[in-house]
Amino acid sequence: MSSVSTDHFPRVRIKSRRAQPFFGRHPWVFAGAIQSIDGDPAPGDEVVLAAHDGQFIGKGIFNPHSNIRVRMYAWDETTLLDRELWSRRLDDAIDLRKRLIVHSESSACRIVNSEADGLSGLTVDRYGDWLAVQFTSLALAHRRDDIVGLLKEKLQPRGIWLRTEKGIRDAEGLELDDGLLAGVEPERTMFIEENGVSFGIDLCQGQKTGFYCDQRDNRAAIARYCHGQKVLDLFCYSGGFSLAAVKLGGAKTSLGIDSSATAIELAKANAQLNGVAERTRFEQGAVFETLEKLQQSQERFDVVILDPPKMVRHLKGIDKAIRGYHSLNRLAVDVLRPGGILVTCSCTGHVSREMFAQILADVSQRSHRPIQILEARGAAPDHPVSTYCPESEYLKCFICRVL
Image (tube, rainbow, N blue to C red; front, side, top):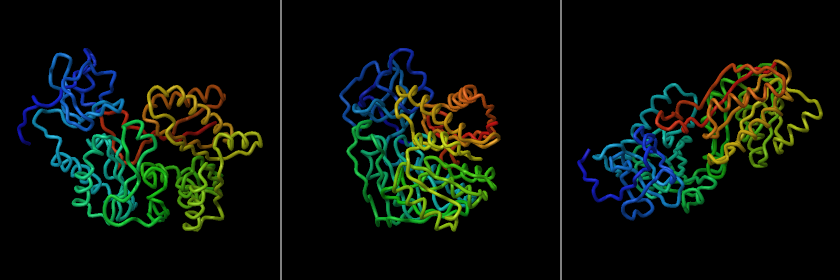
């Protein structure tokens, strides 16, 4: 590492008694924690983070348009936030995935998992010979050319496709559109393999970056509980849990529900692809309304799977998220046979594992049905969690028995 003076960088000072998380290497500096800014940093400029008394904390990148005013990338004065740093961080991330792929039965993998790989605001997924990239921070979006060039050098994909996340313009002041960043555009329907199940995916317009690789191990785990069972798969997207339940687990039948007509068509095609169409049914519908109708008709299932999208994006919406998860799980319990299996997931980072378990405890109490947590699971290991950033443990998956 080269020695470098930080005297010429704008300095962001933290309020008294608010600096401890950043000395602990938390990467997000929210606007409310800032006491003052010395200098006039432009969006995307490198800044020094300091305590209220001027003590050096670390280096980050400034964004006046975001509630996360500074994203932190280094905690010593000698580190430059330059192409060499991004290259080292990418090497570390790729090295982990190479070790994981040796033991994987999937042709899809997360290569970069944002904060957990020291690259806050960057997500990279690999689908066969293509990469799907998301920039969720202005900090790294402004360094897009360096990032894309490094990915080309290190992974040599046939193409790199940019995916944007809903709400990112408002959250980060980013003007990005989905499209080709490098190489050849992927076919609209690509095919991947996961644990012996084949999936057609739409990398260009499907949800997130085309598939939910984070649930890979959970899909395989859930299959063990499904032999001969009647399964209800809610928010089914392209049929991942349903196909694992039927093809891997030997479920008798599975009904998948999703509000997206495109997702339902893709799920039906995936059932045909795997030769299990006669045991699966996919229907477009609103999940809450569907559950209410199933409850009223007294239809019951042996296994109910809940994998809803993120409930809220900001901490101020946490109460709304808790109410939503409670209502959803309560309805799911009502259509589950005694002794049945409830698989319930949350990908809302602001809802902790403890909070999610408490929601289930409240559902158990109000429904007068004991709930046993059999497995408390998270994302697959290509989605690591940073000990510096607890919010990076966004995915919770509980496999429960409901009496």
